Length: 414
Image (cartoon, rainbow, N blue to C red; front, side, top):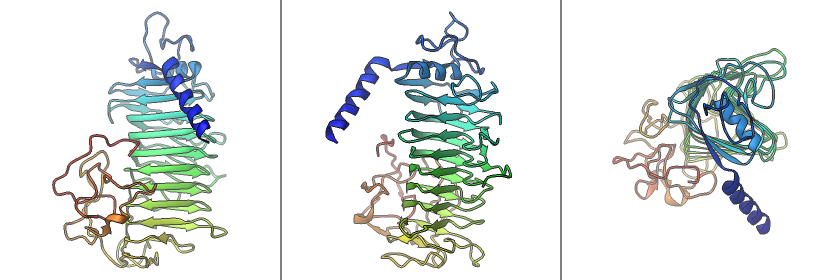
């Protein structure tokens, strides 16, 4: 195992040293590369004008590790069609490892409802940072999963950081569809106002994310306003890890696991229209485990926090506004209001719910239990503010720092 890891690291180093190129996109129109594989992103030949599609095609043709840089502009995908070369329709990642870096939310890739935006193929990797994906649509009989992004197969990887995925649609996975062992890493990302479309012949699931047999790690992210088609995040026969995240105001509720598992730590769930958590395991072997989190639905019992059927498992220190989850682990508080302020920007990239000074969430979790869903010692909250602020951690996604100091190195590896 150790020799295999060393070999993989040496191969990665070789790829970085021998093939890594950076393509700077200056053309906003959707045009193909003149000569994929020559190491030059240009349309037409001789001028060096590089479009986003041309950069993807060049990176695919070369293989290896490549970076694409985008300015604060709107890149519209207008070339219609359905191929697997990125020459038309969506932007296909077919070889190598591609990183796309924007200039912030004002860097927009807009598919205008013509097709999905990205598809990542077997064993490839796509990293997205500092940009917005919108207008993606996958709602035809043979192309119906992943409105913004579709990730296929084992060893295929997706990384997002400071990305907004909004107003995309699909029959399944309005924002993201991942399947067959794909490795998904969602960090500091917003899934907002994505939705599913009913084509009449398949189920509509996961307006934000549909994960079928994938492995997904979510940190410091917010899911809000994702509508039509069950819970915002649907996990089937896969596994999800979530830490320091917020799930709120999604039409069908929060998270559903079906013959799959999830581990949730220090997250906040608020819903007025659907259950926050739903879990089903055919043989009882799959577990949805939650700790140090907040679950809230309105008073009156019209909407339960936990759906009837198999119940999530509590590992303690959760605050639940009703008794539907049947939590009784150490530190659990049922029938309790966490006293949260409204969803807003309290610092950092994503919107969050700040607990009141007198919230029962404050100083609720002992230092020994301030552990992430990946069993790492927590050092920050959803915003990137230091956690803990004192000898205890707050339950939920936000630490009530009165003098907020944000980490400079808030990134994937934390």
